[in-house]
Amino acid sequence: MRIILDTDPGIDDSLAILYLAAQPEMEIVAVGSVHGNVPAPTAADNALRVLELAGLDNVPVAVGAHRPLAQELRTTEFVHGDDGLGGQAGRSPQRRPVDGSAAEQIVRLARSNPSELSILALGPLTNIALAVLLEPELPRLLKSIMVLGGALGVPGNVTTHAEANMWHDPEAADLVFDAGFENLTLVSLDVTETARADEAWMGALAEIGSPRAQFASALLKHYSDFYSRMFGFRTCTIHDPLAAALLHDPSLGRYKDVVVTLELRGTHTRGQLISDWRPIVDDSHIESQAGHGRCPVKATVSVDTETFLSR
Ligand code: BDR
Ligand code: CA
Image 1 (cartoon, rainbow, N blue to C red):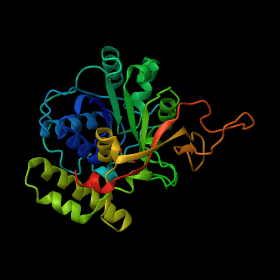
Image 2: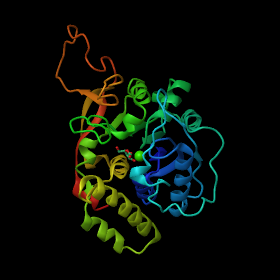
Image 3: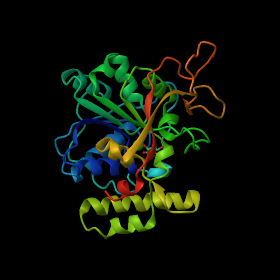
Image 4: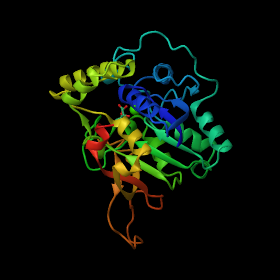
């Protein structure tokens, strides 16, 4: 499978890159960075660092959107560390980002490889939204898109209702869900919260001597320290690698079609991803069915967490 990775590394983004690099069937064709966990230029440098560690020295990395479409930039170094890599960034990457923006890169690659490429979106959806604005046919040019984000039936992880990737750029997310992607899989907190790395799992990883495992282990140490401070326990959610694993092996999950839309105005709920599960056949009398007329997304409703964590 050939993928364009859109990402904001970021601790769990970095783990997802390492996971993908270890799967022979998964080819990362290009990477775009996006604001989110850290500013977009920092995210691009971190992607280059992790690709270097993974031995993927030829994958181009383009810097993406520096800010959301309609709100101020907000980043979350308090979770991922000032460098976005839990203090493990080290020296500058050997390569530099390529010219052009991440959105332009998506459009160029999609046009020159119609129906061949899949996007794995692990950060705010600003780049994907910009790519749709540049090329409205993007949904037809891609093979598929997988989006990590949203909290459908569980609390948010930034506000009571909003998940981070939606909260960072709600307008961009809404534009993407309204763009006509017929093959969009959603991996929300509803399932990532069920696939947690506990201390035994992190301990086993720390026993592996390879530089990649040691790096991953150091990132998780920072991440679980944050969990310990914030929640009082160290068992942490590793969101982005789960999305990468589901893209690699969809049989790990179970899915249901549902239409989704973003809450863009709520005082306390802005950034909430709303899903309409009502089994309505005739909606002609319903004034505001959320996301009326949109393509449904394939929402992941459960995952085989044991198999995922064993990979
Ligand atoms: C998402 O937000 C970010 O902090 C993580 O990298 C992940 O993509 C989870 O809500
Ligand atoms: Ca991310």
